[in-house]
Length: 109
Length: 114
Image (cartoon, rainbow over all chains, first blue to last red; front, side, top):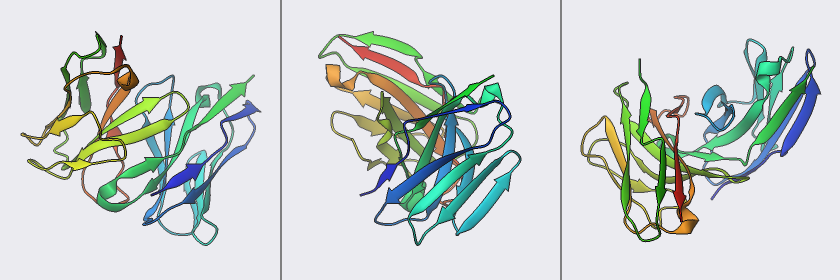
């Protein structure tokens, strides 16, 4: 089985940088994905790391260290619209995902 | 571009009733998934399908059945609903089994069992 741990809530102000950490314990691990969910709506894909290192997509970056079973999502130049829940998810066989419980990010003015 | 469409969006059932949730995707995706999301629990995989005519159990399959008779549709059935099945149900699809392929989610079905 797989389990992922991430903080339940993170707060930050507009324009700041925030990092959401994720640690995982898995049997069969292909990579780490990140999804965003606004107000209980459809989760949307943000990024995927198969290899160690940093992946950058605009204001968002994601990092993976397989040796440490650890990853993080970095959000820069925070905007109010970034207030949402963020989920890390471990990819295993048949592209199935095991999700963490989610981190609620609250961005204040 | 509809993407992944779930029907219905909301439903209230009485304990013991049955119902079917429908998921349809128009992206020609091979893989489809059903998740449930409960407060503080994240998304948990119920069942998934790797192609037309196939289904497989996920993390929490008990009390649910699924069918994939057509590539574009994935149905989730509750034969005898229980209050513990009150949840938000999300369907998702992906193009292939490659781990770098993202899953595309529907807007969810909010189901209450009284």
